[in-house]
Image (cartoon, rainbow, N blue to C red):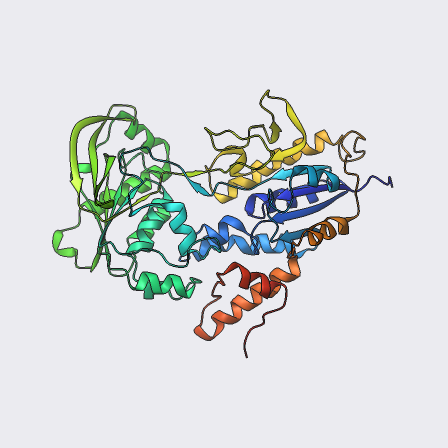
Length: 465
């Protein structure tokens, strides 16, 4: 075997995209050593910190991801932040290729007047809070009785459901104690979800939407005057079973009689309402102004000029996620992605950056379900293998790392005062969280403060009892 083998590959980001890429790369037949870097003390990214706690079915994806990492052929190095603890020039000393799978964690902007008022929030920040993200604040200002959620996707439904749901109904989940206490004290009675297009254009999944109708003591209210279908709508209904199911569920809800609405909290779904201004008073949100829209034949809408003001004291925009730039890596500020051609990162001139790749949302934008990242990762890995000269004989040009000892990167980080958390450390943290949940009949209770997570993973804090 050549002294230049195995190839050394680093993957930055240990969410689904990064883990899928590592798994696929490990099965190519390439003689390769893979290190998976993660900024947080815990792996699993979006599944751990972006899926609502009352969605255990989706969180079960962690089981499959866990099986990949527990094999031992992919090394986890968590609690290491790219751009702070090490940069691309550092990584090139130790790795022949680097794959970025850092996802999209920022809220996309919404350029309407008043969006920056006190009481106006991004959905991504709220999701991070209720999912116990260590970078999120420990408290959240849940002071509004009436709330507006802007968006027509599953994140908008998640935000609306968590806001409206009684905190005690979340107790069986993994929510941290601080989140439970915050939601318990919330005075909310009404959550309004606004979509600028019609019922046939929303991006809700049928399962998520139906689930909304089964939240205890929460009524879902839709308005017949918001139901409009043009030729584009009918084409969407006939061509997509998912759209057909969504429209049927929404239509069934229009048939409910007023006397059926007896719950103490309500979620209102409004269609053909485009948010045009967040209304404020003394710097705080006091309302939302929407413009009635009309379908124009192809499923898109045009404003009618007719506006309506809604009394709300908080606004959450759930209009999409956006990627964050990375130190020394090209970035598309418009698309919020790393510019690339099928996973090969390219510079401002469109030329490939040698040995640098991207996968997941930072590659293609925040679209598609978690499972879609598998095919995305396959494309990136296929090009990496091609660039390496194939499985049998990696090219000398591709083998660029001067330091090939796997321990060298750990020594480098420790010398910089960084404490990498490997898989055994995550197992300690995982066991700790499960032990916290066991007395309460819960699978786990998340540990939130970052420093506490690190101490547990490194073995300096242990469960009581």
